Amino acid sequence: MKLTIRRTFLCSVILFMLMGILFIPYHTALVFYVENTSEIAAYLPLDKEDTFQIIFTHSIHLTDVVEKYIVTDNLEIMQYEMIYEEFGIGMPSNAEEGQTYVYEDGKHHIKDVDTIFPFMNIRNGKTVSEHRLVWGENAEHIVWFNQYFVPGAWFKVKATKLSLWELMEGVKIHD
Image (tube, rainbow, N blue to C red; front, side, top):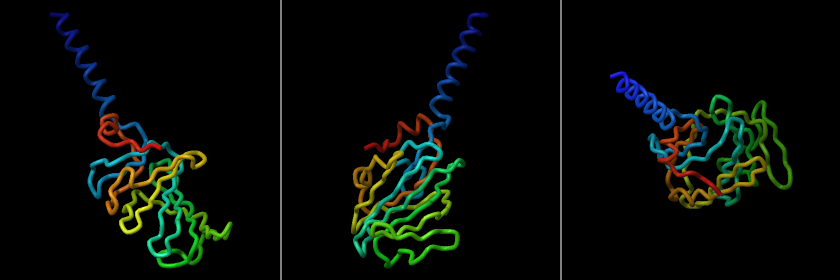
């Protein structure tokens, strides 16, 4: 009888440990959710304070726009810089209060942006589908959105923690 109780207890402990390993979120990632759902389309493993960039080709003046972000300690996304080549539709004409405007190497830089996003809605370009995701200490990793997403698709992008089970469901972004 005691042996049966011990086995049952041991099996229960092992089962709870396995469930904890599988279902407790502890991997930090930048997650691309399909539209406004909880379905994970893809994820990029990132840690707090890691930076990433989203580069897109502006559909009107056909030049690259670089938006730079950092994952904050409380898993929000903070934009800290924007770089673009031409003024025009959708591009800032100057820095706002607290921001810094710099013109370097033929490009306009808006620095010290400090805009916090709990999440971002992003559409992969349809007309000009040249979105890229860049990450790494020296921005050494780059992938094209079209490697992972259909042109025209939109996503809710959020920094969050994922469980091992969620990691197995999604597609890991890698270069």
